[in-house]
Length: 614
Ligand code: ADP
Ligand code: MG
Image (cartoon, rainbow, N blue to C red; front, side, top):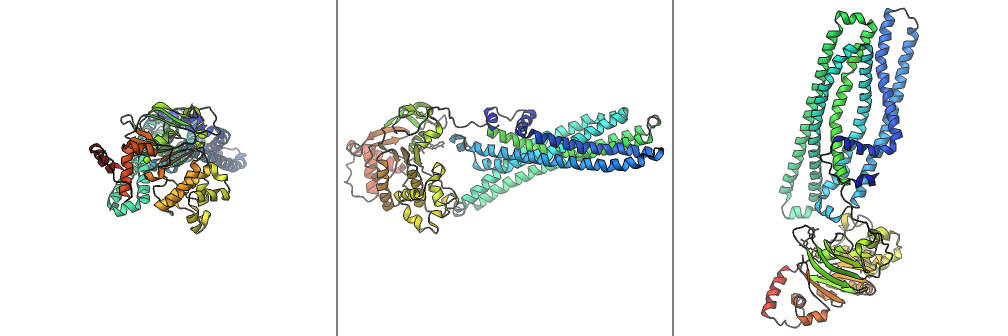
Protein backbone atom coordinates (compact mmCIF):
# COMPACT_ATOMS: atom_id res chain seq x y z
CA UNK A 1 0.00 0.00 0.00
CA UNK A 2 2.70 2.42 0.97
CA UNK A 3 4.73 1.52 -2.09
CA UNK A 4 1.94 2.46 -4.37
CA UNK A 5 1.46 5.72 -2.54
CA UNK A 6 5.07 6.73 -2.60
CA UNK A 7 5.25 6.08 -6.32
CA UNK A 8 3.27 9.24 -7.00
CA UNK A 9 5.43 12.28 -6.81
CA UNK A 10 3.06 15.08 -7.74
CA UNK A 11 2.91 17.91 -5.22
CA UNK A 12 -0.40 17.75 -3.40
CA UNK A 13 -0.78 21.41 -2.58
CA UNK A 14 -3.09 22.21 -5.45
CA UNK A 15 -4.81 18.88 -5.78
CA UNK A 16 -8.48 18.81 -5.05
CA UNK A 17 -10.09 17.17 -2.07
CA UNK A 18 -11.14 14.16 -4.03
CA UNK A 19 -7.54 13.07 -4.57
CA UNK A 20 -6.90 13.25 -0.84
CA UNK A 21 -10.09 11.38 0.02
CA UNK A 22 -9.20 8.70 -2.48
CA UNK A 23 -5.78 8.31 -1.03
CA UNK A 24 -7.13 8.14 2.52
CA UNK A 25 -9.62 5.59 1.29
CA UNK A 26 -6.76 3.52 -0.06
CA UNK A 27 -5.73 3.14 3.58
CA UNK A 28 -9.26 2.04 4.48
CA UNK A 29 -9.44 -0.45 1.62
CA UNK A 30 -7.83 -3.42 3.40
CA UNK A 31 -10.48 -3.10 6.11
CA UNK A 32 -13.38 -2.63 3.72
CA UNK A 33 -15.42 -5.41 5.36
CA UNK A 34 -15.30 -3.80 8.79
CA UNK A 35 -15.97 -0.45 7.19
CA UNK A 36 -19.02 -1.84 5.38
CA UNK A 37 -20.35 -3.36 8.62
CA UNK A 38 -19.88 0.00 10.29
CA UNK A 39 -21.87 1.76 7.56
CA UNK A 40 -24.63 -0.83 7.84
CA UNK A 41 -24.61 -0.31 11.62
CA UNK A 42 -24.97 3.46 11.34
CA UNK A 43 -27.62 3.03 8.66
CA UNK A 44 -29.62 0.82 11.03
CA UNK A 45 -29.18 3.39 13.76
CA UNK A 46 -30.38 6.25 11.58
CA UNK A 47 -33.24 4.41 9.95
CA UNK A 48 -34.48 3.30 13.36
CA UNK A 49 -34.46 6.97 14.36
CA UNK A 50 -36.49 7.89 11.28
CA UNK A 51 -38.82 5.03 12.24
CA UNK A 52 -39.86 7.00 15.32
CA UNK A 53 -41.50 9.61 13.12
CA UNK A 54 -43.49 6.90 11.40
CA UNK A 55 -44.37 5.41 14.80
CA UNK A 56 -45.62 8.83 15.84
CA UNK A 57 -47.95 8.82 12.86
CA UNK A 58 -49.46 5.49 13.91
CA UNK A 59 -49.77 6.67 17.47
CA UNK A 60 -51.70 9.82 16.59
CA UNK A 61 -53.86 7.94 14.11
CA UNK A 62 -54.51 5.30 16.79
CA UNK A 63 -55.79 7.98 19.17
CA UNK A 64 -58.28 9.09 16.51
CA UNK A 65 -58.99 5.73 15.03
CA UNK A 66 -60.50 2.45 16.05
CA UNK A 67 -57.64 0.04 15.25
CA UNK A 68 -57.24 -1.94 18.51
CA UNK A 69 -54.15 -3.84 17.30
CA UNK A 70 -52.16 -0.63 17.74
CA UNK A 71 -52.23 -0.96 21.50
CA UNK A 72 -50.06 -4.04 21.17
CA UNK A 73 -47.96 -3.25 18.11
CA UNK A 74 -46.92 0.28 18.87
CA UNK A 75 -45.16 -0.51 22.20
CA UNK A 76 -43.56 -3.62 20.67
CA UNK A 77 -42.29 -1.56 17.75
CA UNK A 78 -40.98 1.03 20.17
CA UNK A 79 -38.85 -1.52 22.01
CA UNK A 80 -37.88 -3.15 18.71
CA UNK A 81 -36.73 0.15 17.23
CA UNK A 82 -34.57 0.87 20.27
CA UNK A 83 -33.08 -2.58 20.07
CA UNK A 84 -32.18 -2.18 16.39
CA UNK A 85 -30.87 1.29 17.09
CA UNK A 86 -28.63 -0.04 19.86
CA UNK A 87 -27.24 -2.89 17.76
CA UNK A 88 -26.63 -0.46 14.91
CA UNK A 89 -24.87 1.98 17.18
CA UNK A 90 -22.59 -0.71 18.59
CA UNK A 91 -21.67 -2.16 15.19
CA UNK A 92 -21.14 1.28 13.71
CA UNK A 93 -18.92 2.62 16.47
CA UNK A 94 -16.92 -0.52 17.11
CA UNK A 95 -16.15 -1.30 13.48
CA UNK A 96 -15.33 2.29 12.67
CA UNK A 97 -12.92 2.52 15.61
CA UNK A 98 -11.35 -0.72 14.42
CA UNK A 99 -10.78 0.68 10.94
CA UNK A 100 -9.64 4.12 12.00
CA UNK A 101 -7.13 2.90 14.54
CA UNK A 102 -5.62 0.67 11.89
CA UNK A 103 -5.50 3.60 9.49
CA UNK A 104 -3.67 5.72 12.07
CA UNK A 105 -1.28 2.90 12.78
CA UNK A 106 -0.58 2.38 9.08
CA UNK A 107 -0.12 6.09 8.41
CA UNK A 108 2.22 6.43 11.34
CA UNK A 109 4.36 3.44 10.39
CA UNK A 110 4.44 4.51 6.75
CA UNK A 111 5.64 7.91 7.87
CA UNK A 112 8.25 6.45 10.19
CA UNK A 113 9.48 3.95 7.62
CA UNK A 114 9.74 6.80 5.15
CA UNK A 115 12.16 8.57 7.47
CA UNK A 116 14.42 5.53 7.20
CA UNK A 117 14.61 5.61 3.43
CA UNK A 118 14.79 9.33 2.67
CA UNK A 119 17.93 10.81 1.19
CA UNK A 120 20.55 12.66 3.21
CA UNK A 121 19.81 15.90 1.42
CA UNK A 122 16.21 15.73 2.60
CA UNK A 123 17.37 15.67 6.22
CA UNK A 124 19.83 18.49 5.52
CA UNK A 125 16.90 20.64 4.41
CA UNK A 126 14.28 19.73 7.02
CA UNK A 127 13.91 20.92 10.57
CA UNK A 128 13.73 17.86 12.80
CA UNK A 129 10.98 19.41 14.93
CA UNK A 130 8.70 19.58 11.91
CA UNK A 131 9.39 15.96 11.06
CA UNK A 132 8.61 14.82 14.61
CA UNK A 133 5.44 16.93 14.69
CA UNK A 134 4.18 15.02 11.68
CA UNK A 135 4.24 11.75 13.58
CA UNK A 136 2.92 13.16 16.83
CA UNK A 137 0.56 16.03 15.95
CA UNK A 138 -0.46 15.64 12.30
CA UNK A 139 -1.39 12.00 12.65
CA UNK A 140 -3.73 12.74 15.55
CA UNK A 141 -5.41 15.37 13.39
CA UNK A 142 -6.10 12.70 10.84
CA UNK A 143 -7.37 10.48 13.66
CA UNK A 144 -9.92 13.15 14.48
CA UNK A 145 -11.05 13.32 10.88
CA UNK A 146 -11.15 9.61 10.34
CA UNK A 147 -12.94 8.65 13.55
CA UNK A 148 -15.20 11.52 14.55
CA UNK A 149 -15.84 13.01 11.16
CA UNK A 150 -16.53 9.73 9.46
CA UNK A 151 -18.79 8.63 12.28
CA UNK A 152 -20.84 11.80 12.19
CA UNK A 153 -20.74 11.94 8.42
CA UNK A 154 -22.09 8.43 8.01
CA UNK A 155 -24.50 8.41 10.93
CA UNK A 156 -25.94 11.89 10.60
CA UNK A 157 -25.63 11.84 6.82
CA UNK A 158 -27.76 8.73 6.57
CA UNK A 159 -30.12 10.20 9.16
CA UNK A 160 -30.58 13.39 7.14
CA UNK A 161 -31.08 11.47 3.92
CA UNK A 162 -33.53 9.15 5.69
CA UNK A 163 -35.47 12.07 7.13
CA UNK A 164 -35.59 13.88 3.81
CA UNK A 165 -36.77 10.77 2.01
CA UNK A 166 -39.40 10.22 4.63
CA UNK A 167 -40.58 13.82 4.32
CA UNK A 168 -40.76 13.47 0.54
CA UNK A 169 -42.74 10.30 0.98
CA UNK A 170 -45.21 11.86 3.41
CA UNK A 171 -45.65 15.14 1.55
CA UNK A 172 -43.35 15.97 -1.33
CA UNK A 173 -44.59 19.51 -1.89
CA UNK A 174 -43.81 20.62 1.65
CA UNK A 175 -40.46 18.88 1.46
CA UNK A 176 -39.44 21.14 -1.41
CA UNK A 177 -39.31 24.02 1.08
CA UNK A 178 -36.69 22.19 3.06
CA UNK A 179 -34.78 21.09 0.00
CA UNK A 180 -34.67 24.70 -1.22
CA UNK A 181 -32.42 25.73 1.64
CA UNK A 182 -29.83 23.03 1.03
CA UNK A 183 -27.83 25.09 -1.51
CA UNK A 184 -27.57 27.94 1.01
CA UNK A 185 -26.39 25.59 3.75
CA UNK A 186 -24.00 23.93 1.34
CA UNK A 187 -22.51 27.32 0.52
CA UNK A 188 -22.02 28.24 4.18
CA UNK A 189 -20.47 24.85 4.92
CA UNK A 190 -18.23 25.09 1.86
CA UNK A 191 -17.05 28.60 2.68
CA UNK A 192 -16.30 27.69 6.27
CA UNK A 193 -14.52 24.54 5.10
CA UNK A 194 -12.11 26.46 2.89
CA UNK A 195 -11.35 28.77 5.76
CA UNK A 196 -10.83 25.86 8.15
CA UNK A 197 -8.37 24.27 5.76
CA UNK A 198 -6.21 27.34 5.44
CA UNK A 199 -6.13 27.95 9.18
CA UNK A 200 -5.43 24.28 9.88
CA UNK A 201 -2.35 24.13 7.74
CA UNK A 202 -1.03 27.24 9.48
CA UNK A 203 -1.68 25.61 12.85
CA UNK A 204 0.19 22.49 11.79
CA UNK A 205 3.14 24.52 10.71
CA UNK A 206 3.28 26.39 13.94
CA UNK A 207 3.02 23.14 15.88
CA UNK A 208 6.15 22.09 13.99
CA UNK A 209 7.80 25.34 15.12
CA UNK A 210 6.70 24.71 18.69
CA UNK A 211 8.36 21.29 18.65
CA UNK A 212 11.47 22.66 16.96
CA UNK A 213 12.02 25.57 19.31
CA UNK A 214 11.35 23.53 22.42
CA UNK A 215 13.71 20.70 21.43
CA UNK A 216 16.40 23.23 20.59
CA UNK A 217 15.99 24.93 23.95
CA UNK A 218 15.99 21.59 25.75
CA UNK A 219 18.94 20.05 23.91
CA UNK A 220 20.94 23.23 23.91
CA UNK A 221 20.21 24.28 27.47
CA UNK A 222 23.92 24.80 28.21
CA UNK A 223 24.47 27.15 25.27
CA UNK A 224 21.25 28.97 26.05
CA UNK A 225 22.34 29.69 29.61
CA UNK A 226 25.99 30.44 29.06
CA UNK A 227 25.39 32.78 26.14
CA UNK A 228 22.42 34.43 27.82
CA UNK A 229 19.94 33.20 25.24
CA UNK A 230 17.02 32.68 27.64
CA UNK A 231 15.46 35.97 26.72
CA UNK A 232 15.64 35.30 23.00
CA UNK A 233 14.34 31.77 23.36
CA UNK A 234 11.45 32.98 25.53
CA UNK A 235 10.50 35.57 22.95
CA UNK A 236 10.84 33.12 20.10
CA UNK A 237 8.63 30.60 21.84
CA UNK A 238 6.13 33.19 23.00
CA UNK A 239 5.74 34.46 19.46
CA UNK A 240 5.15 31.02 17.99
CA UNK A 241 2.80 29.94 20.75
CA UNK A 242 0.83 33.16 20.46
CA UNK A 243 0.58 32.76 16.71
CA UNK A 244 -0.84 29.27 17.27
CA UNK A 245 -3.33 30.75 19.73
CA UNK A 246 -4.45 33.36 17.20
CA UNK A 247 -4.99 30.76 14.53
CA UNK A 248 -6.91 28.57 16.98
CA UNK A 249 -9.15 31.54 17.79
CA UNK A 250 -9.81 32.15 14.10
CA UNK A 251 -10.81 28.54 13.83
CA UNK A 252 -13.12 28.73 16.82
CA UNK A 253 -14.63 32.00 15.60
CA UNK A 254 -15.48 30.42 12.27
CA UNK A 255 -17.06 27.44 14.01
CA UNK A 256 -18.89 29.71 16.44
CA UNK A 257 -20.36 31.79 13.62
CA UNK A 258 -21.13 29.12 11.06
CA UNK A 259 -22.97 26.74 13.35
CA UNK A 260 -25.67 29.16 14.62
CA UNK A 261 -25.92 30.62 11.14
CA UNK A 262 -26.81 27.23 9.71
CA UNK A 263 -29.30 26.68 12.51
CA UNK A 264 -30.89 30.04 11.86
CA UNK A 265 -31.27 29.27 8.17
CA UNK A 266 -32.86 25.96 9.07
CA UNK A 267 -35.18 27.61 11.58
CA UNK A 268 -36.27 30.04 8.88
CA UNK A 269 -37.11 27.14 6.60
CA UNK A 270 -39.00 25.47 9.42
CA UNK A 271 -41.02 28.61 9.96
CA UNK A 272 -42.00 28.74 6.31
CA UNK A 273 -42.81 25.07 6.51
CA UNK A 274 -45.13 25.41 9.47
CA UNK A 275 -46.78 28.43 7.91
CA UNK A 276 -47.46 26.48 4.72
CA UNK A 277 -48.39 23.31 6.56
CA UNK A 278 -50.99 25.10 8.57
CA UNK A 279 -52.68 26.43 5.44
CA UNK A 280 -56.14 24.89 5.03
CA UNK A 281 -55.45 23.18 1.69
CA UNK A 282 -52.40 21.40 3.08
CA UNK A 283 -54.05 20.21 6.25
CA UNK A 284 -56.95 18.95 4.24
CA UNK A 285 -54.67 16.57 2.36
CA UNK A 286 -53.15 14.87 5.39
CA UNK A 287 -54.32 12.73 8.24
CA UNK A 288 -53.52 14.22 11.66
CA UNK A 289 -50.99 11.41 12.13
CA UNK A 290 -49.20 12.20 8.87
CA UNK A 291 -49.17 15.87 9.82
CA UNK A 292 -47.62 15.25 13.24
CA UNK A 293 -45.16 12.75 11.74
CA UNK A 294 -44.17 15.29 9.12
CA UNK A 295 -43.58 18.06 11.63
CA UNK A 296 -41.68 15.80 14.02
CA UNK A 297 -39.47 14.47 11.22
CA UNK A 298 -38.82 18.02 10.04
CA UNK A 299 -37.98 19.14 13.55
CA UNK A 300 -35.47 16.30 13.86
CA UNK A 301 -33.53 17.76 10.91
CA UNK A 302 -31.65 20.69 12.50
CA UNK A 303 -29.72 18.58 15.00
CA UNK A 304 -27.93 16.29 12.54
CA UNK A 305 -27.45 19.27 10.22
CA UNK A 306 -25.68 21.13 12.99
CA UNK A 307 -23.51 18.14 13.77
CA UNK A 308 -22.64 17.81 10.13
CA UNK A 309 -21.61 21.42 9.91
CA UNK A 310 -19.62 21.22 13.16
CA UNK A 311 -17.70 18.21 11.99
CA UNK A 312 -16.63 20.15 8.96
CA UNK A 313 -13.92 21.90 10.97
CA UNK A 314 -12.53 18.63 12.20
CA UNK A 315 -12.69 17.09 8.78
CA UNK A 316 -10.82 20.00 7.23
CA UNK A 317 -8.18 19.81 9.94
CA UNK A 318 -7.72 16.14 9.18
CA UNK A 319 -7.51 16.78 5.46
CA UNK A 320 -4.94 19.52 5.88
CA UNK A 321 -2.86 17.16 7.98
CA UNK A 322 -3.33 14.37 5.47
CA UNK A 323 -2.04 16.64 2.71
CA UNK A 324 1.09 17.26 4.74
CA UNK A 325 1.58 13.60 5.52
CA UNK A 326 1.10 12.54 1.92
CA UNK A 327 3.57 15.16 0.76
CA UNK A 328 6.07 13.66 3.13
CA UNK A 329 5.33 10.17 1.87
CA UNK A 330 5.84 11.37 -1.70
CA UNK A 331 9.37 12.58 -1.05
CA UNK A 332 11.90 10.71 -3.09
CA UNK A 333 13.68 7.79 -1.52
CA UNK A 334 17.36 7.18 -1.76
CA UNK A 335 18.15 5.91 -5.20
CA UNK A 336 18.57 2.13 -4.86
CA UNK A 337 18.38 0.67 -8.34
CA UNK A 338 21.62 -1.31 -8.27
CA UNK A 339 21.24 -5.02 -8.95
CA UNK A 340 24.72 -6.44 -8.36
CA UNK A 341 25.04 -8.45 -5.18
CA UNK A 342 28.13 -7.80 -3.08
CA UNK A 343 28.90 -10.43 -0.49
CA UNK A 344 32.45 -9.44 0.37
CA UNK A 345 34.31 -6.67 -1.43
CA UNK A 346 38.05 -6.93 -1.92
CA UNK A 347 38.11 -3.21 -1.26
CA UNK A 348 39.71 -1.36 -4.17
CA UNK A 349 38.19 2.09 -4.52
CA UNK A 350 38.63 4.44 -7.49
CA UNK A 351 37.47 8.02 -7.73
CA UNK A 352 37.37 8.99 -11.43
CA UNK A 353 36.95 12.70 -12.23
CA UNK A 354 34.47 13.15 -9.40
CA UNK A 355 32.69 16.49 -9.08
CA UNK A 356 30.27 17.12 -6.26
CA UNK A 357 28.31 19.99 -4.76
CA UNK A 358 25.56 20.18 -2.15
CA UNK A 359 23.88 23.09 -3.90
CA UNK A 360 24.22 24.02 -7.57
CA UNK A 361 26.09 27.25 -6.87
CA UNK A 362 29.05 26.10 -4.84
CA UNK A 363 31.24 23.17 -5.99
CA UNK A 364 32.60 21.25 -3.01
CA UNK A 365 34.70 18.57 -4.75
CA UNK A 366 36.39 19.30 -8.07
CA UNK A 367 37.91 16.73 -10.41
CA UNK A 368 38.87 14.17 -7.78
CA UNK A 369 41.00 11.32 -9.12
CA UNK A 370 42.15 8.87 -6.50
CA UNK A 371 42.83 5.17 -6.30
CA UNK A 372 42.86 3.25 -3.05
CA UNK A 373 44.19 -0.26 -3.57
CA UNK A 374 42.57 -3.08 -1.64
CA UNK A 375 44.06 -3.27 1.83
CA UNK A 376 45.79 0.12 1.59
CA UNK A 377 45.54 2.84 4.17
CA UNK A 378 44.95 6.31 2.78
CA UNK A 379 45.04 9.42 4.88
CA UNK A 380 43.15 12.58 3.97
CA UNK A 381 44.48 15.82 5.37
CA UNK A 382 43.66 19.45 4.74
CA UNK A 383 42.07 22.51 6.20
CA UNK A 384 38.67 22.36 7.81
CA UNK A 385 36.05 22.75 5.08
CA UNK A 386 38.31 21.43 2.33
CA UNK A 387 35.88 18.57 1.59
CA UNK A 388 37.39 15.56 3.41
CA UNK A 389 34.19 14.46 5.13
CA UNK A 390 32.26 15.04 1.94
CA UNK A 391 34.63 12.81 -0.01
CA UNK A 392 34.31 10.05 2.60
CA UNK A 393 30.50 10.32 2.63
CA UNK A 394 30.36 9.65 -1.09
CA UNK A 395 31.64 6.09 -0.68
CA UNK A 396 28.59 4.77 1.25
CA UNK A 397 26.47 6.88 -1.16
CA UNK A 398 25.06 9.29 1.39
CA UNK A 399 25.14 11.71 -1.53
CA UNK A 400 25.27 11.10 -5.28
CA UNK A 401 28.10 12.49 -7.36
CA UNK A 402 27.18 15.04 -10.03
CA UNK A 403 29.73 13.86 -12.54
CA UNK A 404 32.46 11.28 -12.68
CA UNK A 405 32.35 7.89 -11.04
CA UNK A 406 33.30 6.05 -7.92
CA UNK A 407 34.23 2.41 -8.44
CA UNK A 408 34.42 -0.37 -5.88
CA UNK A 409 36.27 -3.48 -7.07
CA UNK A 410 36.08 -1.96 -10.55
CA UNK A 411 32.28 -1.57 -10.60
CA UNK A 412 30.41 1.74 -10.23
CA UNK A 413 29.06 1.88 -6.67
CA UNK A 414 25.57 2.67 -8.01
CA UNK A 415 25.41 -0.78 -9.57
CA UNK A 416 25.45 -2.55 -6.20
CA UNK A 417 22.46 -3.03 -3.96
CA UNK A 418 22.64 -0.13 -1.53
CA UNK A 419 22.34 -2.17 1.65
CA UNK A 420 25.05 -4.57 0.51
CA UNK A 421 27.36 -1.74 -0.44
CA UNK A 422 26.95 -0.20 2.99
CA UNK A 423 27.49 -3.56 4.57
CA UNK A 424 31.08 -3.41 3.30
CA UNK A 425 31.83 -0.20 5.14
CA UNK A 426 32.45 0.55 8.80
CA UNK A 427 32.33 4.25 9.57
CA UNK A 428 33.28 6.35 12.54
CA UNK A 429 31.88 9.74 11.69
CA UNK A 430 32.91 13.10 12.97
CA UNK A 431 29.71 13.43 14.98
CA UNK A 432 29.28 10.20 16.88
CA UNK A 433 25.68 9.20 17.50
CA UNK A 434 24.81 6.92 20.39
CA UNK A 435 21.36 5.54 21.12
CA UNK A 436 19.68 5.72 24.50
CA UNK A 437 20.46 2.09 25.26
CA UNK A 438 23.09 -0.02 26.98
CA UNK A 439 26.78 0.11 26.18
CA UNK A 440 26.59 -3.39 24.75
CA UNK A 441 23.64 -2.61 22.48
CA UNK A 442 25.33 0.56 21.30
CA UNK A 443 28.44 -1.31 20.26
CA UNK A 444 26.48 -4.23 18.82
CA UNK A 445 24.06 -2.01 16.91
CA UNK A 446 21.92 -2.93 13.89
CA UNK A 447 23.13 -5.98 12.01
CA UNK A 448 25.68 -6.57 14.76
CA UNK A 449 22.94 -7.19 17.31
CA UNK A 450 23.65 -10.91 17.40
CA UNK A 451 27.28 -10.48 18.41
CA UNK A 452 28.23 -12.32 21.58
CA UNK A 453 29.38 -10.48 24.67
CA UNK A 454 32.83 -11.93 24.08
CA UNK A 455 33.06 -10.35 20.62
CA UNK A 456 31.76 -7.06 21.97
CA UNK A 457 34.37 -7.17 24.73
CA UNK A 458 37.14 -7.81 22.22
CA UNK A 459 36.02 -4.89 20.08
CA UNK A 460 35.84 -2.66 23.14
CA UNK A 461 39.30 -3.75 24.17
CA UNK A 462 40.75 -3.01 20.74
CA UNK A 463 39.16 0.42 20.88
CA UNK A 464 40.77 1.03 24.27
CA UNK A 465 37.29 1.31 25.74
CA UNK A 466 37.22 -1.73 28.00
CA UNK A 467 38.86 0.05 30.89
CA UNK A 468 36.30 2.81 31.20
CA UNK A 469 33.37 0.52 30.43
CA UNK A 470 34.31 -1.76 33.28
CA UNK A 471 34.34 1.20 35.61
CA UNK A 472 30.77 2.17 34.67
CA UNK A 473 28.17 1.27 37.34
CA UNK A 474 26.74 -1.64 35.37
CA UNK A 475 29.58 -2.31 32.96
CA UNK A 476 28.29 -3.32 29.53
CA UNK A 477 24.69 -3.02 30.76
CA UNK A 478 24.98 0.66 31.69
CA UNK A 479 22.52 2.95 29.91
CA UNK A 480 24.40 5.72 28.13
CA UNK A 481 21.61 8.34 28.21
CA UNK A 482 20.16 10.46 25.45
CA UNK A 483 22.81 10.43 22.68
CA UNK A 484 25.33 9.19 25.23
CA UNK A 485 25.29 12.30 27.45
CA UNK A 486 26.54 10.26 30.37
CA UNK A 487 29.86 9.66 28.59
CA UNK A 488 32.73 11.99 27.81
CA UNK A 489 33.56 12.97 24.24
CA UNK A 490 36.53 10.62 24.15
CA UNK A 491 34.50 7.76 25.60
CA UNK A 492 31.83 8.26 22.98
CA UNK A 493 34.44 8.15 20.25
CA UNK A 494 35.89 4.94 21.62
CA UNK A 495 32.42 3.39 21.66
CA UNK A 496 32.00 4.36 18.02
CA UNK A 497 35.38 2.87 17.16
CA UNK A 498 34.47 -0.35 18.98
CA UNK A 499 31.23 -0.47 16.96
CA UNK A 500 33.18 -0.17 13.73
CA UNK A 501 35.76 -2.74 14.75
CA UNK A 502 33.02 -5.19 15.64
CA UNK A 503 31.53 -4.77 12.19
CA UNK A 504 34.78 -6.11 10.75
CA UNK A 505 34.00 -4.79 7.26
CA UNK A 506 36.46 -4.74 4.33
CA UNK A 507 36.39 -0.94 4.23
CA UNK A 508 36.97 1.25 7.26
CA UNK A 509 36.44 5.00 7.29
CA UNK A 510 37.68 6.97 10.29
CA UNK A 511 36.64 10.62 10.12
CA UNK A 512 38.58 12.41 12.85
CA UNK A 513 37.77 9.40 14.96
CA UNK A 514 40.26 10.16 17.66
CA UNK A 515 39.98 13.95 17.74
CA UNK A 516 38.49 14.04 21.24
CA UNK A 517 41.14 11.80 22.78
CA UNK A 518 44.20 12.78 24.76
CA UNK A 519 47.55 11.89 23.26
CA UNK A 520 48.03 8.84 25.46
CA UNK A 521 44.63 7.27 24.67
CA UNK A 522 45.15 8.09 21.03
CA UNK A 523 48.49 6.27 21.01
CA UNK A 524 46.88 3.25 22.67
CA UNK A 525 44.14 3.11 20.08
CA UNK A 526 46.60 3.82 17.31
CA UNK A 527 48.34 0.50 17.80
CA UNK A 528 45.05 -1.37 17.87
CA UNK A 529 43.84 0.49 14.80
CA UNK A 530 47.02 -0.23 12.90
CA UNK A 531 46.52 -3.93 13.52
CA UNK A 532 42.96 -3.66 12.26
CA UNK A 533 43.94 -1.61 9.22
CA UNK A 534 46.46 -4.20 8.07
CA UNK A 535 44.15 -6.32 5.95
CA UNK A 536 41.47 -3.87 4.97
CA UNK A 537 41.02 -0.73 2.92
CA UNK A 538 41.10 2.21 5.27
CA UNK A 539 40.41 5.88 4.79
CA UNK A 540 41.65 7.97 7.69
CA UNK A 541 40.84 11.62 8.09
CA UNK A 542 43.00 13.12 10.77
CA UNK A 543 44.14 16.48 11.83
CA UNK A 544 46.82 15.20 14.17
CA UNK A 545 49.37 14.30 11.55
CA UNK A 546 51.49 12.17 13.84
CA UNK A 547 48.79 9.49 13.61
CA UNK A 548 49.02 9.02 9.87
CA UNK A 549 52.74 8.88 9.21
CA UNK A 550 52.53 5.18 8.38
CA UNK A 551 49.74 5.52 5.84
CA UNK A 552 50.44 4.06 2.40
CA UNK A 553 49.40 7.28 0.80
CA UNK A 554 48.69 10.73 2.16
CA UNK A 555 46.28 12.89 0.18
CA UNK A 556 46.31 16.62 0.84
CA UNK A 557 43.10 18.46 0.00
CA UNK A 558 42.44 22.12 -0.40
CA UNK A 559 39.18 23.79 -1.41
CA UNK A 560 37.75 20.57 -2.82
CA UNK A 561 40.82 19.62 -4.83
CA UNK A 562 43.64 17.16 -4.29
CA UNK A 563 46.81 19.18 -4.26
CA UNK A 564 49.38 16.62 -3.14
CA UNK A 565 49.65 12.84 -2.98
CA UNK A 566 52.52 10.76 -1.63
CA UNK A 567 53.95 8.98 1.36
CA UNK A 568 54.92 10.87 4.48
CA UNK A 569 58.55 10.77 3.41
CA UNK A 570 57.93 11.86 -0.17
CA UNK A 571 55.72 14.72 0.88
CA UNK A 572 58.19 15.98 3.45
CA UNK A 573 60.93 15.93 0.85
CA UNK A 574 58.69 17.83 -1.53
CA UNK A 575 58.30 20.49 1.18
CA UNK A 576 54.90 21.60 -0.08
CA UNK A 577 51.67 22.05 1.84
CA UNK A 578 51.96 18.80 3.79
CA UNK A 579 55.47 19.58 4.95
CA UNK A 580 54.23 22.94 6.14
CA UNK A 581 51.27 21.51 8.02
CA UNK A 582 53.53 18.95 9.57
CA UNK A 583 56.16 21.39 10.74
CA UNK A 584 53.51 23.71 12.11
CA UNK A 585 51.95 21.02 14.21
CA UNK A 586 55.24 20.13 15.72
CA UNK A 587 56.01 23.69 16.63
CA UNK A 588 52.43 24.06 17.98
CA UNK A 589 52.81 20.94 20.05
CA UNK A 590 56.09 22.29 21.34
CA UNK A 591 57.58 19.38 19.44
CA UNK A 592 61.15 18.68 18.58
CA UNK A 593 61.04 18.84 14.82
CA UNK A 594 63.97 20.53 13.08
CA UNK A 595 63.60 24.26 12.67
CA UNK A 596 61.75 24.89 9.41
CA UNK A 597 63.62 26.34 6.50
CA UNK A 598 61.27 29.03 5.39
CA UNK A 599 60.98 30.51 1.96
CA UNK A 600 59.03 33.66 1.30
CA UNK A 601 56.31 31.74 -0.48
CA UNK A 602 55.93 29.06 2.15
CA UNK A 603 55.64 31.66 4.90
CA UNK A 604 52.60 33.08 3.16
CA UNK A 605 50.94 29.68 2.75
CA UNK A 606 51.80 28.93 6.35
CA UNK A 607 50.12 32.04 7.66
CA UNK A 608 46.97 31.20 5.74
CA UNK A 609 47.04 27.54 6.72
CA UNK A 610 47.56 28.29 10.39
CA UNK A 611 44.58 30.58 10.36
CA UNK A 612 42.22 27.95 8.95
CA UNK A 613 43.45 24.75 10.47
CA UNK A 614 40.94 23.56 13.00
P1 ADP B 1 35.98 18.90 5.99
O1 ADP B 1 35.51 17.56 6.44
O2 ADP B 1 37.20 18.85 5.14
O3 ADP B 1 36.17 19.84 7.14
P2 ADP B 1 33.43 19.07 4.72
O4 ADP B 1 33.47 18.00 3.71
O5 ADP B 1 32.68 18.79 5.95
O6 ADP B 1 34.88 19.55 5.06
O7 ADP B 1 32.78 20.36 4.07
C1 ADP B 1 33.17 20.84 2.80
C2 ADP B 1 32.27 22.01 2.41
O8 ADP B 1 30.95 21.56 2.20
C3 ADP B 1 32.19 23.08 3.45
O9 ADP B 1 32.28 24.31 2.80
C4 ADP B 1 30.83 22.92 4.07
O10 ADP B 1 30.28 24.17 4.37
C5 ADP B 1 30.03 22.27 2.98
N1 ADP B 1 29.07 21.29 3.52
C6 ADP B 1 29.35 20.25 4.32
N2 ADP B 1 28.26 19.52 4.59
C7 ADP B 1 27.24 20.12 3.94
C8 ADP B 1 25.83 19.85 3.80
N3 ADP B 1 25.26 18.79 4.39
N4 ADP B 1 25.09 20.68 3.05
C9 ADP B 1 25.66 21.74 2.44
N5 ADP B 1 26.96 22.04 2.51
C10 ADP B 1 27.76 21.26 3.25
MG1 MG C 1 35.10 16.91 8.31
